[in-house]
Amino acid sequence: MRLVFVSSTFKDMQFERDALKVRVAPRIDSFLAKYGENVHFGDLRWGVNTSELENEDSSKKVLKVCLDEIDDCRPYMIVIIGERYGWIPSSSLLDEAMKIKDINNVPNDISVTNLEIEYGALLNPDFEGRILFYFRNPFDTSKMSEEERKIYESEPPLHKEKLDR
Image 1 (cartoon, rainbow, N blue to C red):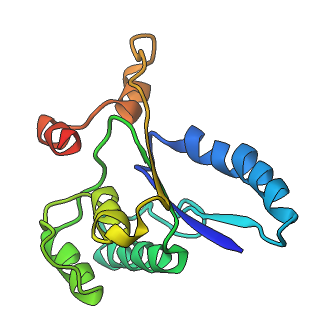
Image 2 (cartoon, one colour):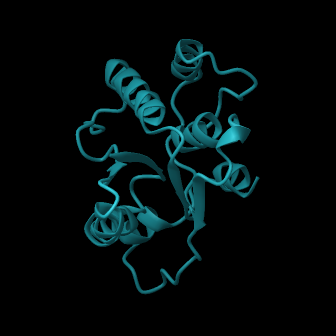
């Protein structure tokens, strides 16, 4: 079985993550079957409750499971980037997670998605060619309700600056 970690922000990438699971994985599995292989996408939406991210224990669990899943899926990763930067945990939680995984030279004010990219892809140049980056083009949100727009639009200006970098 080939494990592939899927990294993206959660709120705005539901469609893309579902498409990987429902459309892409079966086609890849069909191709890999002749080699006795199959693919599994490591998607943290299934199996990790993120509804209580304000709870420090829940946040620690999310970070630990996330980084462990990246380790399990190495060297394969798909990164999907849209307009959102994502959830930024407290610096103490990030420090703790980075100490557990011995991650150095990463700022402690980054989003979980950015941490996934740094840890799973950018800190490992040997994995080049096994990690795919996809950038979604912005789409027109003018006909959406304000609540729907919040799902897809960039968070505060500082987040947009970090995403652009």
